[in-house]
Image 1: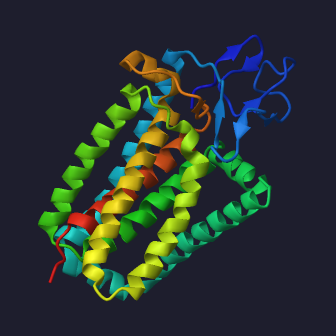
Image 2 (image 1 turned 90 degrees about the horizontal axis):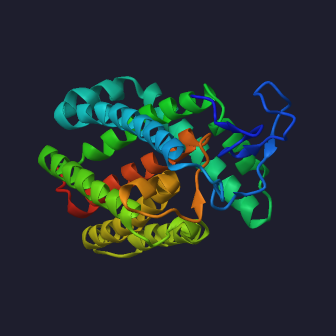
Length: 292
């Protein structure tokens, strides 16, 4: 990663704000920026020039593209070579156990962070953001989960016909592109919706409970997929605006209240990656045809 721009001895556009005596990058450990909002996991008033912001955007989407290539590169084996792939995993169940353990550990950590937020704490989130802004650990983290989600997404795709998976994937690409253009060009500010979207997570739990209570699960599954796809479509707009920030000015848009700082490139790519994967899976649940 290129060094952050130095203006009058201060790192601009970083989640860490160094004092004037620390004009170089060899100084003491920085402290967390006062403008960091732990609920938004982003900062406000970073005042980055659009050209610098655009470099950050290119880096985020470069990482995102690499992650998606890894994930769907693995998932395609479950679609086009289904029998051989499933037989291989059946003979090597340790792969499934490792993937499951990693994903469960991440879910438990996310729950712990949410509980701590509800209790007024933020140490876990701040530590997590510190890891996500420290190479090579952030890149290793993204690589591990790109592979894990490749297996998980592949397992889901294996239960659908290859034609419907390809159709939904193409439709997802088109819709995400449209949502991205809307997020950049619109004057509406979605960046302050972060705390409200946490409440939506409770709705997901209720949907799971209702799924097991209702007799007609097929219809409910498609309806739930449609609703959740809409929700994650909004999340794509929200995270896209946090990524572009002042760079949207160069595309006919406007700057927003909150935006990611330039050292949060890995975290920004991770969030948008999760949005894309989840949006695709819910679209598949809504429109996909089950195999057999």
